[in-house]
Length: 218
Image 1 (cartoon, rainbow, N blue to C red):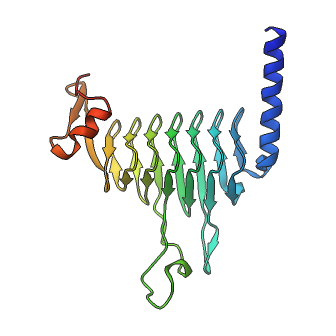
Image 2 (cartoon, helix red, strand yellow):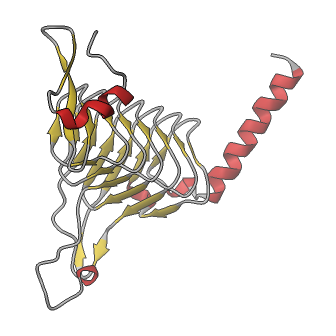
Protein backbone atom coordinates (compact mmCIF):
# COMPACT_ATOMS: atom_id res chain seq x y z
CA UNK A 1 0.00 0.00 0.00
CA UNK A 2 1.39 3.40 -1.00
CA UNK A 3 1.66 6.40 1.30
CA UNK A 4 -1.32 8.00 -0.45
CA UNK A 5 -3.38 4.84 0.04
CA UNK A 6 -2.42 4.75 3.74
CA UNK A 7 -3.50 8.37 4.13
CA UNK A 8 -6.80 7.71 2.34
CA UNK A 9 -7.49 4.69 4.56
CA UNK A 10 -6.68 6.70 7.68
CA UNK A 11 -8.97 9.51 6.56
CA UNK A 12 -11.74 6.98 5.92
CA UNK A 13 -11.34 5.48 9.41
CA UNK A 14 -11.37 8.92 11.01
CA UNK A 15 -14.51 9.90 9.11
CA UNK A 16 -16.24 6.70 10.19
CA UNK A 17 -15.38 7.43 13.82
CA UNK A 18 -16.75 10.98 13.57
CA UNK A 19 -20.00 9.83 11.96
CA UNK A 20 -20.43 7.03 14.51
CA UNK A 21 -20.00 9.47 17.39
CA UNK A 22 -22.44 11.94 15.88
CA UNK A 23 -25.23 9.39 15.50
CA UNK A 24 -24.50 7.70 18.84
CA UNK A 25 -23.44 4.34 17.43
CA UNK A 26 -22.67 3.01 20.93
CA UNK A 27 -26.41 3.16 21.72
CA UNK A 28 -27.37 0.70 18.98
CA UNK A 29 -27.82 -2.97 19.83
CA UNK A 30 -25.21 -3.66 17.13
CA UNK A 31 -23.46 -1.71 14.39
CA UNK A 32 -21.29 -3.98 12.28
CA UNK A 33 -17.80 -3.56 10.94
CA UNK A 34 -17.36 -0.62 8.54
CA UNK A 35 -21.05 0.27 8.79
CA UNK A 36 -22.11 3.89 9.04
CA UNK A 37 -25.21 6.04 9.33
CA UNK A 38 -24.42 9.39 7.77
CA UNK A 39 -25.67 12.25 9.96
CA UNK A 40 -28.04 13.85 10.44
CA UNK A 41 -30.34 10.96 11.31
CA UNK A 42 -33.31 10.47 13.64
CA UNK A 43 -33.07 7.30 15.72
CA UNK A 44 -35.67 6.37 18.32
CA UNK A 45 -35.00 3.38 20.64
CA UNK A 46 -31.56 2.66 19.11
CA UNK A 47 -31.02 -0.25 21.52
CA UNK A 48 -33.57 -2.18 19.46
CA UNK A 49 -31.66 -1.85 16.16
CA UNK A 50 -29.16 -4.41 14.82
CA UNK A 51 -27.13 -3.42 11.77
CA UNK A 52 -24.77 -5.81 10.00
CA UNK A 53 -21.36 -5.26 8.40
CA UNK A 54 -20.58 -2.72 5.66
CA UNK A 55 -24.02 -1.13 5.75
CA UNK A 56 -24.33 2.43 4.44
CA UNK A 57 -27.25 4.63 5.47
CA UNK A 58 -27.29 8.04 3.82
CA UNK A 59 -28.27 11.25 5.56
CA UNK A 60 -31.69 12.22 6.96
CA UNK A 61 -32.85 8.65 7.50
CA UNK A 62 -35.45 8.14 10.23
CA UNK A 63 -35.58 5.04 12.42
CA UNK A 64 -38.80 5.35 14.40
CA UNK A 65 -38.95 2.34 16.71
CA UNK A 66 -42.03 2.81 18.85
CA UNK A 67 -41.92 1.47 22.42
CA UNK A 68 -44.93 3.42 23.68
CA UNK A 69 -47.63 5.45 21.98
CA UNK A 70 -50.83 6.85 23.49
CA UNK A 71 -50.80 4.50 26.44
CA UNK A 72 -49.93 1.28 24.63
CA UNK A 73 -46.57 -0.50 24.95
CA UNK A 74 -44.72 -2.24 22.11
CA UNK A 75 -41.52 -4.28 21.62
CA UNK A 76 -40.05 -3.27 18.26
CA UNK A 77 -37.01 -4.89 16.66
CA UNK A 78 -35.26 -3.82 13.45
CA UNK A 79 -32.51 -5.82 11.76
CA UNK A 80 -30.56 -4.72 8.69
CA UNK A 81 -28.34 -7.27 6.94
CA UNK A 82 -24.78 -6.99 5.66
CA UNK A 83 -23.82 -4.73 2.74
CA UNK A 84 -27.25 -3.11 2.52
CA UNK A 85 -27.43 0.47 1.22
CA UNK A 86 -30.20 2.82 2.33
CA UNK A 87 -30.51 6.12 0.48
CA UNK A 88 -31.37 9.49 1.99
CA UNK A 89 -34.66 10.30 3.75
CA UNK A 90 -35.70 6.65 4.08
CA UNK A 91 -38.22 6.17 6.92
CA UNK A 92 -38.56 3.04 9.04
CA UNK A 93 -41.63 2.85 11.28
CA UNK A 94 -41.24 -0.22 13.46
CA UNK A 95 -43.70 -1.28 16.15
CA UNK A 96 -43.10 -5.04 15.94
CA UNK A 97 -40.49 -6.61 13.66
CA UNK A 98 -38.82 -5.39 10.47
CA UNK A 99 -36.07 -7.45 8.86
CA UNK A 100 -34.00 -6.31 5.89
CA UNK A 101 -31.81 -8.98 4.28
CA UNK A 102 -28.23 -8.80 3.04
CA UNK A 103 -27.29 -6.82 -0.08
CA UNK A 104 -30.55 -4.86 -0.28
CA UNK A 105 -30.67 -1.47 -2.01
CA UNK A 106 -33.32 0.92 -0.67
CA UNK A 107 -33.93 4.11 -2.67
CA UNK A 108 -34.54 7.60 -1.33
CA UNK A 109 -37.86 8.59 0.28
CA UNK A 110 -38.85 4.96 0.89
CA UNK A 111 -41.29 4.14 3.71
CA UNK A 112 -41.13 0.76 5.47
CA UNK A 113 -43.80 0.33 8.16
CA UNK A 114 -45.10 -2.69 10.07
CA UNK A 115 -48.12 -0.88 11.59
CA UNK A 116 -50.36 2.18 11.18
CA UNK A 117 -52.36 4.58 13.34
CA UNK A 118 -55.67 3.10 14.43
CA UNK A 119 -58.63 5.17 13.21
CA UNK A 120 -61.81 3.41 14.45
CA UNK A 121 -62.49 5.86 17.32
CA UNK A 122 -64.20 8.76 15.54
CA UNK A 123 -64.21 10.85 18.73
CA UNK A 124 -60.42 11.28 18.62
CA UNK A 125 -57.96 12.47 15.99
CA UNK A 126 -56.26 9.56 14.26
CA UNK A 127 -52.89 10.80 15.49
CA UNK A 128 -54.14 10.48 19.10
CA UNK A 129 -55.07 6.81 18.72
CA UNK A 130 -52.68 3.89 19.43
CA UNK A 131 -50.71 2.07 16.79
CA UNK A 132 -52.40 -0.99 15.31
CA UNK A 133 -51.15 -4.48 16.14
CA UNK A 134 -47.98 -4.82 14.04
CA UNK A 135 -47.49 -7.37 11.30
CA UNK A 136 -43.89 -8.26 10.48
CA UNK A 137 -42.18 -6.90 7.39
CA UNK A 138 -39.42 -8.92 5.72
CA UNK A 139 -37.40 -7.91 2.67
CA UNK A 140 -35.39 -10.72 1.12
CA UNK A 141 -31.68 -10.62 0.38
CA UNK A 142 -30.58 -8.94 -2.82
CA UNK A 143 -33.79 -6.99 -3.33
CA UNK A 144 -34.15 -3.44 -4.66
CA UNK A 145 -36.75 -0.98 -3.39
CA UNK A 146 -37.17 1.93 -5.80
CA UNK A 147 -37.40 5.60 -4.78
CA UNK A 148 -40.66 6.70 -3.18
CA UNK A 149 -41.98 3.18 -2.65
CA UNK A 150 -43.99 2.22 0.44
CA UNK A 151 -43.64 -1.23 2.01
CA UNK A 152 -46.61 -1.72 4.31
CA UNK A 153 -47.55 -3.86 7.31
CA UNK A 154 -47.44 -7.62 6.76
CA UNK A 155 -45.34 -7.52 3.59
CA UNK A 156 -42.86 -10.28 2.77
CA UNK A 157 -40.64 -9.93 -0.29
CA UNK A 158 -38.72 -12.96 -1.47
CA UNK A 159 -35.03 -12.75 -2.32
CA UNK A 160 -34.14 -10.67 -5.36
CA UNK A 161 -37.46 -8.83 -5.55
CA UNK A 162 -37.49 -5.59 -7.57
CA UNK A 163 -39.94 -2.91 -6.44
CA UNK A 164 -40.40 -0.08 -8.95
CA UNK A 165 -40.34 3.57 -7.94
CA UNK A 166 -43.50 4.79 -6.24
CA UNK A 167 -45.01 1.32 -5.73
CA UNK A 168 -47.24 0.73 -2.70
CA UNK A 169 -46.63 -2.84 -1.58
CA UNK A 170 -48.68 -5.03 0.76
CA UNK A 171 -48.75 -8.83 0.81
CA UNK A 172 -46.41 -11.76 0.19
CA UNK A 173 -44.39 -12.09 -3.01
CA UNK A 174 -42.19 -14.86 -4.35
CA UNK A 175 -38.48 -14.46 -4.94
CA UNK A 176 -37.44 -12.56 -8.07
CA UNK A 177 -40.78 -10.85 -8.55
CA UNK A 178 -40.93 -7.43 -10.21
CA UNK A 179 -43.58 -5.19 -8.65
CA UNK A 180 -45.03 -1.88 -9.80
CA UNK A 181 -48.08 0.29 -9.25
CA UNK A 182 -50.42 1.47 -6.49
CA UNK A 183 -51.47 -0.99 -5.25
CA UNK A 184 -48.43 -2.94 -6.41
CA UNK A 185 -48.90 -5.85 -8.79
CA UNK A 186 -46.50 -8.45 -10.16
CA UNK A 187 -45.54 -7.33 -13.65
CA UNK A 188 -42.75 -9.86 -14.17
CA UNK A 189 -41.94 -13.11 -12.37
CA UNK A 190 -39.30 -15.80 -12.53
CA UNK A 191 -40.39 -19.19 -13.88
CA UNK A 192 -38.12 -21.99 -12.65
CA UNK A 193 -39.39 -24.53 -15.17
CA UNK A 194 -38.64 -22.26 -18.13
CA UNK A 195 -35.58 -20.66 -16.51
CA UNK A 196 -36.65 -17.17 -17.49
CA UNK A 197 -38.75 -14.18 -16.50
CA UNK A 198 -42.37 -14.15 -17.65
CA UNK A 199 -44.28 -10.90 -18.17
CA UNK A 200 -47.78 -10.11 -17.01
CA UNK A 201 -50.22 -9.86 -19.91
CA UNK A 202 -51.78 -6.73 -18.40
CA UNK A 203 -51.40 -3.94 -21.00
CA UNK A 204 -51.23 -1.29 -18.26
CA UNK A 205 -47.69 -2.33 -17.48
CA UNK A 206 -46.19 -2.47 -20.97
CA UNK A 207 -44.29 0.79 -20.66
CA UNK A 208 -43.13 0.06 -17.12
CA UNK A 209 -41.81 -3.36 -18.16
CA UNK A 210 -39.91 -1.76 -21.01
CA UNK A 211 -38.38 0.77 -18.64
CA UNK A 212 -37.27 -2.09 -16.37
CA UNK A 213 -35.54 -4.16 -19.00
CA UNK A 214 -37.85 -4.92 -21.88
CA UNK A 215 -38.09 -8.52 -23.02
CA UNK A 216 -38.73 -11.67 -21.04
CA UNK A 217 -35.71 -13.71 -22.09
CA UNK A 218 -33.35 -15.47 -19.64
